[in-house]
Image (cartoon, rainbow over all chains, first blue to last red; front, top):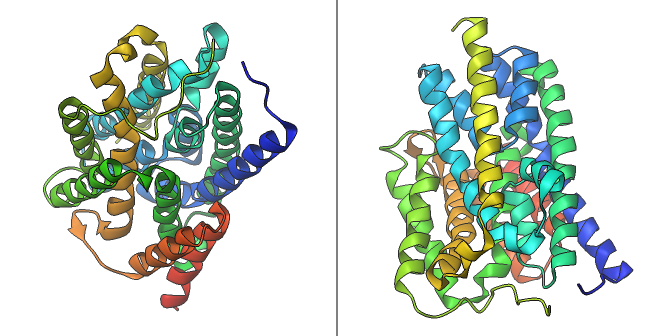
Length: 235
Length: 102
């Protein structure tokens, strides 16, 4: 395995902490929304600690808030959580961890930690990006959840601070490096169109999953390898 | 919803979500050796992130909505084209939306 230069490590960790801060802070709004739905502060914190995948958490709380049954809320959360399985599939050969390390790493397989590691050019860099992002988001997301739950409605609408716009911008910034390739651009546009197209007719959380169908279709039909793919490491 | 039902829902769905993450990491590497599987796994983050951007910025519940979030995203695109750092992009998008809502 190629060693990681201190400068490269520092740069990856700095970017990762930036992602952790930006994403983690949004936990305030999750905490506030969850207690407004009727969950206790302890239940709200348990969701962030155990489930730890923002979109699924918002989906579960969203279904409950809309009057949905607890079971359908749980199923929506799980359905949305399946994208983390797909991320894991992508991460496994890159991180190459087994045993306890894999059990611990699995907990922080989320959008951000995946995005901050799959673009790296070596396994060492991917591991640093994954761990620094995953655990900084974990710490900040859970701290922010507790604060949001305690503050409850006292804090007011998180939209006042533009936090909802920050999340969209964060996802775009994570996607950006992959948009250099024409095929990826087309996949991104098609996926966004599919997701928006089904928003009015399917439960919250499903539009994002439906968009994964675009990746399945294009991946199965195209013949060309992805030029932005992670190079194999010399063995 | 009783307190017990709430706890069962929270912990059950939470543990389920963890097992879904673990399943992905535990799949044998040779499954990915198939080129089509590899291409799909590569394109999944692209498709899901694009969908997350779209849904996050242009919808509220079951409705498609154009509001200050889109202005935030436009600012983000401009800054990304200028190669601004991640945090600058995110903070600028939030500030844009917040200022438009004043």
